[in-house]
Length: 278
Image 1: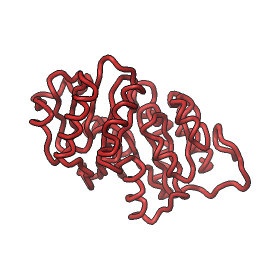
Image 2: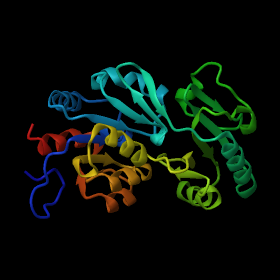
Image 3: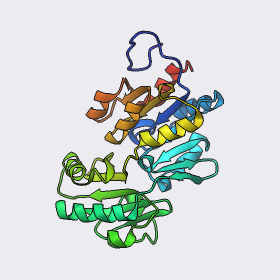
Image 4: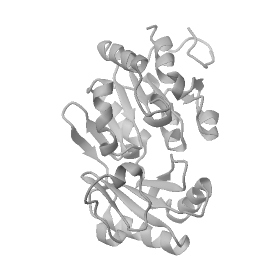
């Protein structure tokens, strides 16, 4: 059977041994929830011994409401590859942090290059931000969030540096940031606003998933991956089989091997059901 939106190029590929999927705009519906159909498909794959790894830009604190919905098992890669999280034990299995001196250098470089840039930090133990940083509504509800200049709140537990600008367009800002500090950190974006996400040099969803797959004895060609935004590009390029969601960013649609139905049409679940004959 041909996967939804896919194309046949010779013999049908063997069934994947691991599924890697982004969450927002990909596995989750328009309300940011896991549908009953998606839950069902994930559960069946679990019974078949096929791991489903959630590979997301979300920090850990935005994941707590999802674990039960997806069965409370398996592994997740959070913060664009900065953290490997063990779901059953609710513990950090690996943290790929940005050195403090790099954080400070990046901050000073961007303040000089793009005046008006403000910063926030995703850490293994929480969140911190500069006073002028316009944070997400979920963050504003968290009590006692540490605040201060980047140089004051930076430490050795940071897995993602966030930079925001209120006057530049998203892709324009990303281009400027990449040009200025791309040799020091890995830059990407997954937001509709002008928010650039930075990980340690060489850290992406793909590089962390590659390490995890080596531990599990799974080759890239045995992985099927799903995504929708530019921060998914390395993941989709690395996986043996890749799907862009029907609602994906144009760069993602151009790169992926196949196109799945939209995220609000249970696109991942429908495609996996066809691939695995469920």
